[in-house]
Image (cartoon, rainbow, N blue to C red; front, top):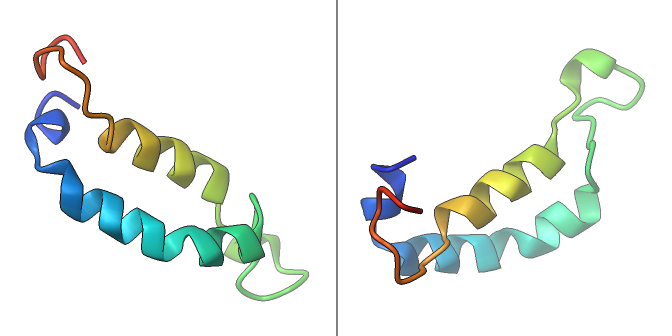
Length: 64
C-alpha cells in the first residue's frame, strides 16, 4: 500500500468518477451471468480499495 500512496491520485480519481455509474447499477455483488455464483464480482471490496488508493492526505506515504 505504501507504493500505491506514492502514485498520482488525479488519474485514479478521474477513472473512479467514470466508473461510478457502472458500480451503482451493478450493486455490491454483481453476477456476470445471472444465477451463476461463480461469476459473482465483489464490487464492495473493489470500492473500498479504490477509496484507499485515492486517499490524498498530508501524511507521508508510509503513514497513510
